[in-house]
Amino acid sequence: SKFLNDKWMIKNGFLNDVQEHKPWWWNIKVQKLNLSAPLILLPEVSCQKAIEILQEKGYDQAPVVAESGLILGMVTLSNTLTSVLAGNAQFSDPVTKVIYDQFSKIGLEDSLGKLSSILENDHFAIVVHEQMQFNGNGSSFMKQMVFGVVTAIDLLTFVSRNDKK
Image 1 (cartoon, rainbow, N blue to C red):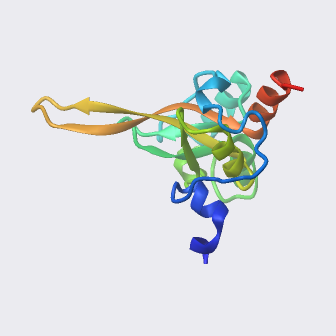
Image 2 (cartoon, rainbow, N blue to C red):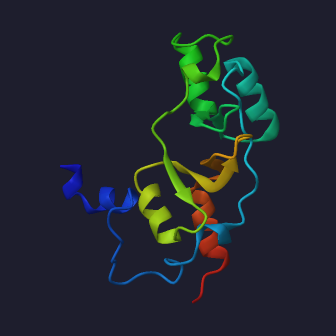
């Protein structure tokens, strides 16, 4: 049934969004948001340490990325605290026990319209940039680098600051 859902099709790149009355910002690229570099946690960081880091740095969430560059998910301050307080995780457990592994990715070249569609269902999207990496033997592969985390507040701030009335 999700294949009959246009929003799902757009979010996953199977359909282009053909909204009739698009706002002025609809086709602007995500890179124009000027996102700050994200705080990234490695999977072995403990829940206790993740809470301390997020609070100290003033972040609500951070991507959890393996040393290989594989994006494992997102850890949020509220989910981590809730999981620990409910007894579903210990302060000493690695953050991988409390990560959201269902998340949306968006590229720097994607439109704010696509981002808007994602943010209708998700609290955030991980902004990724693909780059080609070469091994010592000359073989190559595409690696996704986390460029930022974007929320509805980021989009709203951009639109309100640049509103073309």
